Length: 137
Image (cartoon, rainbow, N blue to C red; front, side, top):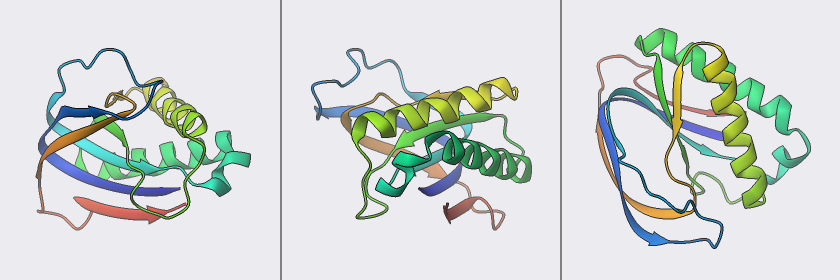
């Protein structure tokens, strides 16, 4: 798994193209303020360790949140961080498991709509070294 996070003043997405038959049917309003945006790529190696990798990712995201003083997290599936790509259904399942773990820990955790190509609008902060953070798990 690859994780790239941004401490953002704002983040929004606009749908461009539906990429998958199983894409979310609705594309709700996706304008967030004062949020940790986490781009996640689930890799082939993660397919056999879905719960373990979801737990490690949630723990890392909580650590980043503590450093940037955020309780609101937006997860975005981003299959451009590695050449190794997990099966899309598994990737979606892992992101949902991460979201649920964060919610159980008291975070407001959301996902961008699944299966769409988006125009992204990101106002990323840069005051601290962890405002932008990359990790391979």
